[in-house]
Amino acid sequence: MEAGGGNDSQDNGAPVAVSKAPAENDPSQDIHGEIQALKKKLEDETRLRKYTEQVLDSRQHELEVAESKLEELRAQLSEAHDQVTQAKGRSKSKEKQLSEAKDQIFRLQPQRKDVNEADAIEAYRTLCANVHRWVENRMKGILDELDAGRLRARPAPPQAVRFVSMMRETAKRGLALDQSDVYHVVAIIMNYLCLVFFSKSFYCPLDEYEGDATLTFIDELEASMSRLPRDPAHCREWRSETLAAMTSQKSFKTRRVRFIVLVTEDLATLLSAIAPKVPTAELQSSIRRSIVEPAADLAHDLHVASSIYSLKWPARGAWSRLEVYECLDLANGGEALNLSGTAPSSSVRRNVAYLFDVSPGLFVERVVSGKKSPLKAICRPSVLVFSGGGGVQQSPTVMNWLWESAVSLPSPGREGPQRSATPAPLRKSTGSNQPSRRR
Image (tube, rainbow, N blue to C red; front, side, top):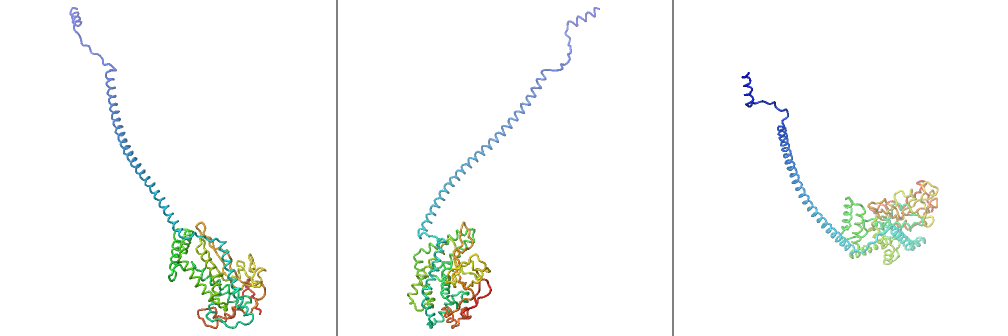
């Protein structure tokens, strides 16, 4: 017992190590774990921040570079704008200089008044009336001699050959038509004027060179311009202004006077066959005043006009299209016979016979809005017809007398007089039932 009691006291007097069971949740470990997690998170955040700062720095650098380029481009744009402004200023200055130069050029020539269609029609009708009146007045002498049977002395064959060579083919069928001499001579004069003035691209020589090299150059240059992508109005305006400038020069005016004198002398020589007793000076003066100068003035106005004017004779087969021509009725002293709107087979034209062409018509091609309009007749060609029915009376005529004079001289180069002095039969407007001839 005592031993057991001694042990108990010994046990109570000395400390005894007693082991404890581990705690299930140690706070220090939790804190340490949280600290480690926070450190890791902080490191991640730090790395992310550094990366973000690097990205921002890179973007900032790129932005600065872009802003620098933008400023440079703005400077270039401003410089270009200044250059454009300066160029516009220079362009306006050049345009002003060009305008002043153009005005100066065209101030050197008179202001060109472009002929309009009404003026052209009036001038052409006046010319035709002048020719007809001149022929009536100047043929009185030779017609009186023909009627009295005193027409004996024939003109020299070469003169007669040249005169009848100016006849159109249709007129050669009507040499012996009674009262037709005046119309034959009118047709010859109009044919002569067409050949000398109106059938050319410009009626009068522009230089002293053979072949009129200046006019050839202008024609070729206008043709070359028309082949470029350029509207016809500009080409025609250029031609008109060029011709107007050239014809305002003193040298051209002098050349024009000489040309008119030459034409007058030549036409007077031609027409002396039907006015043999008229003094040469008087004949030339009347021809120049009544025919040549009006024709030259009209040709000048037409050739420098913006629109394109031309004279055209009736086409072949005019007998079948009398409705489009001005018909002069030989049966009624040359009065106009209105056949507009009629057909060849109509009753109105049944007894109307076509004889021959008297004068060409005046045509125009307008140049409007950069385009050429279709060819239009503003003054119709005139033809001689006979509405008396039956046949046209045949009688001795001056034209037949001249034809016989021409036939007496062989002329291989002149086909008309070589044929026969007997005119071919006439043709009715219906194309059938040729009229018989009465003496």
